[in-house]
Length: 484
Image (cartoon, one colour):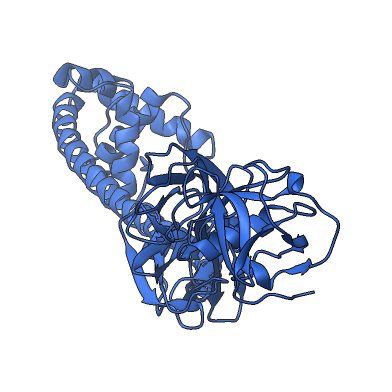
């Protein structure tokens, strides 16, 4: 039951105005407070009302000595949020004695609100980075206190300071997504009681950029995703698309071409962008990857690169088709041309041979004719010489007799012509017949070879019959002259 309002209070018999036995002024006199249910919430309200800082402890059992007079309040039940002690619920009439007078120890001065800030100039961080918080107070009180770091109302870290220290440092390393949020600090007693107001809030952002996606689309509608091998026909167009799932607007995409310093950059539109290659060529063949860049709180953040996207530029099938058709036609023409060339080659080989043989045959005939004519001329001359010589010897009786005897033998045999097996005899007879037909003189045919041999040592006697035959064949009338 709340019976008193705005009643004055004081602390007596302590080490100053901020510690001692609690007394309440009512009806013109000071009265004590019974310690039944007396706790730190009650002490907190007392210290707050007196402007003595925070409550350090709540004393019971007449810690600061016995009072006198009446005991005004019993079973006080403060929540700690009240401004005065008389606002707290309590009982007025009860059975209590001064051996149970309640007391309070306050810090002695009101603590100012601390200030929280970060050592770095920015409040945005990448995963894995560290952060340093600094909680500062303008002055310290002469009692031990603890600084607490809170995130979103939850206690994260605590650190005790000596009475002369005015700042507390909190360090968080290897930040992760769970560390994102609003941070504040506060001073507390060693028993965990908050003895100051919370500091200002510092909003920490952990920028997490997931790995982007990279894909390739061709002119004919084919789609490839990294790390799948992509195939593009030379001369066709293709596009490489980079995209990312993120909460941050804007940003840039960078396209990297492995093996060179070639990099293209385009702005992100709805967290995606495309890089177009109008005409694919072999110089575009290689491995591609992309990354995402975004500005958050004046700080640039980069994502990791995507997996490599292999791009293979293949030759256009049209030249191969045309080349195949051309090669096919050439092969067909070649198949048709080879038999013709073989036939033509054989024909060319046969024609010169026939001409050569004919020409050679004509040449041989001419040469033979010249040879025969030459020999005929030579034999004619030789024959004339032999003839003259034979005439010279025909005057001898023996010669004439032999010629007549040979003539009679031919008639007796009944032959118009005698074939002589002996080549010398044939020659001799031919000369003799010629001579007989011309001069009617008789010469023994057996003597002709010897006669010729004597006059012409360079002429082989065995050749004479053949020469005579040739002469007779080419000259004219009769091969064998009939002596008759």
